[in-house]
Image (tube, rainbow, N blue to C red):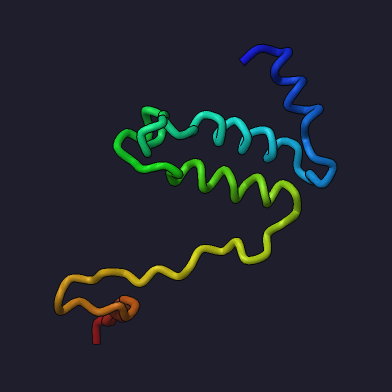
Length: 100
């Protein structure tokens, strides 16, 4: 990316942006994870992943956060897939026995 292009990105930044560094980094990630025209992400780190990829989605969240919009941006709770017979209960450490 040339310096000229970088200055254009700064001038195109919306007035609502409260975190310019986050905005800049998120924009660069989003640009690096464009669709490849075949339904996937063009970035080699996302080989085989459909577009929009995880990185692009996270960049979009960061762009919204850089504008101060963090409402309803928390991910949905994930229900873990435990193997049969395993419990989701927290592990309680054993108490140490003292010599009598």
